[in-house]
Amino acid sequence: MAEVKPKTKQPPRATGPKDLLIDVKQTYDDQYVQYAVDARIQTKLVGGTPRRLETTYAMIDSRVKAGKITEEEAERIKEEVVKKYEEMRKKQAAETGEDPESLSSSAAALESNWNTFWFDENGLYLETRTIKAAMRASMSALNVFTENAKLRKRVGHNDGTYVEGIGPHVDRIYFNRDGRYVTEPDEYEDRVVLLRTAKGPISALKRIDVIWGDQMGKECMLSWRYKVLKSCSITERDITKGLALLQDRGLGAMTSQGFGRFKLSRFERLA
Picture 1 (cartoon, rainbow, N blue to C red):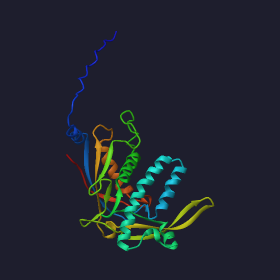
Picture 2 (spheres, helix red, strand yellow; picture 1 turned 180 degrees about the vertical axis):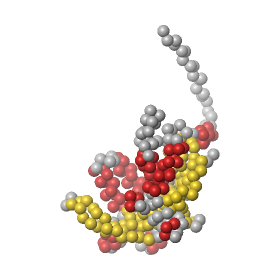
Picture 3 (cartoon, one colour; picture 1 turned 30 degrees about the vertical axis):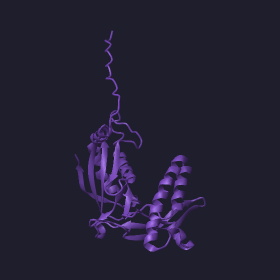
Picture 4 (cartoon, helix red, strand yellow; picture 1 turned 90 degrees about the vertical axis):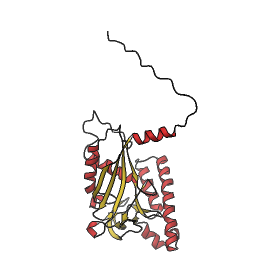
């Protein structure tokens, strides 16, 4: 007969008033490993944000229709993007004296097929969530979540990794050139794209804003912090492999066409 071990007696729960904020801060610092990442853009990097809010709304609604997100998620996303578009609208109006909402019909039609970058009063930026998603896609391509399945467990997007920007907003990663934030795209390009419609595929003209990298003779940097829970299954080797591959997979939009490639200039584990 197996020996029955006595249950360990739990210490009594502490009671009475006490300021626990210092405990939260200490725990926060202790539960993560943090890495500093600096990326130097090599090719052109393409913006993936529609200049018109209604275009973004249409994209969100199409994802609901395809069953990729719920209606509740769509409403939450719309609330978030409205705030960002309001930032962009105010900045554009202050600089040009024109309200983007009062554009002529021809100008509005052009903008409906024009993708740019998110921007605020500081400059152009990528959302940190896009870096996290790109890293996850890179590690998935390397079978990080399927190798040695007994030791690993895929838990959706809550995999114990977090990305933070360095600057005024932790959810934004700003483009930096010569020690300053980049405030305008370097150029735009017009490209013919194939659209699938109810009447079949049609060709359309799409305008994209781009930021130049080393191959265009312009230095441009992105810097962020990559935070990993010490208790999660993702190892430092997994992160290293993911970043190494991500250099060629690229950041931003249209990465499948070779845009957004970069080279790491810093990858350092912080204390």
